[in-house]
Figure 1 (spheres, rainbow, N blue to C red):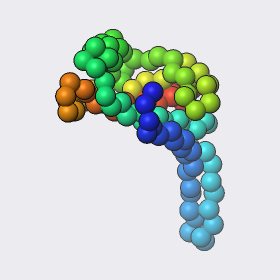
Figure 2 (figure 1 turned 90 degrees about the horizontal axis):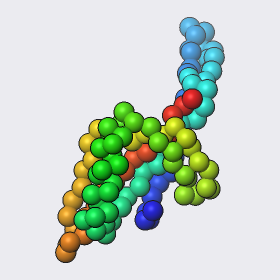
Figure 3 (figure 1 turned 180 degrees about the vertical axis):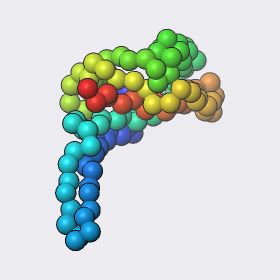
Figure 4 (figure 1 turned 90 degrees about the vertical axis):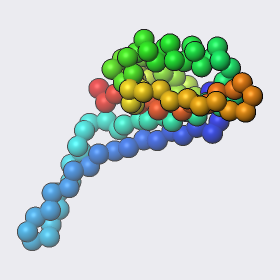
Length: 107
């Protein structure tokens, strides 16, 4: 993985507000949502083709795969891409750039 990259975690909390101003809070889903945004610069044509091939095999956001968190080494066995399109662009010279967003499912 190249840097900079981002790792985020999100919690879902539902809030019910009552007429008297009181609130009741409870989790919207049981586990937190993990998401990684990986920016890849300076890819060769072969590297970009391999990424595009893997993306295609996964059918974009429809597939699942294992992903190892580069920060702590934890393996998340049920991950998928966010979005069904892989965008890439050509840098100066023959290098390519793409950004992948991966999310761990909330099993």
